[in-house]
Length: 288
Image (cartoon, rainbow, N blue to C red; front, side):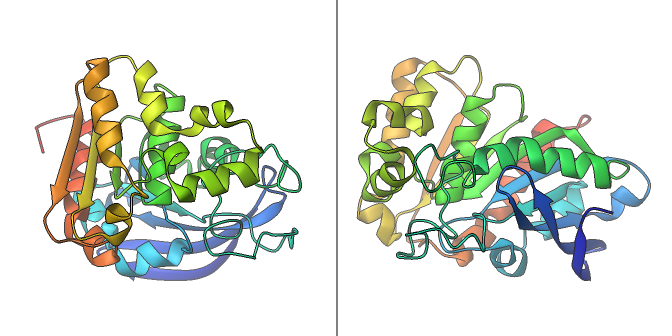
């Protein structure tokens, strides 16, 4: 068994496992939580991957987001990967809260000293599904998966979905960093992880990537109008919305939720909708 079980928690009729396992992409052990719904005891279930935001670990959403409440009802497994490698002790990786540790932006860094270690895009799209198929393949149908995320994780979910047509059945995001090349968070991170090639940054920007998408987006986005980061111009969902409209795409549902902030109160309030959105595209049978 190529992982360590740090906690086994029975919840909502299923089981939440808090694990750690080695990753070739990051050269470290990675924290990972997995919710297995009760249906997984008798058959394989689809997978929803949740990507967390800046400063977070898998524990934030498992303990405060309560997505497993709705995943249990619909028979979905949920995987909660960590937000970055940990323990590398690279120069500069712990100097600020919005870059480095717990702030990977789910990309493969190309600038030193992060190159070859901050490879979270490869971790999420390759190492994680390979691990789940190998160790939990009898319970999880890893080929049948959707992706979602919050804030930086919303950026990750949107970009990984748009970069990999067909890999995920749907995507959703709470308060995503939707146009990182145009906001301070994204510009700071991309300069550190990629260097000064600003044209190349567009390959990791959902607003730019959506312009090349073909077909139905199958995308749900919620943004709170009381979110200070939205007010400060860090999220820019209106740019993503405009780009999709100008490209003539269908399938983007953008909802501005009156008064809601950036917190897990926001995530948990609309968690049912996001799990239901994924289930609609992952499960066959009657409409949900």
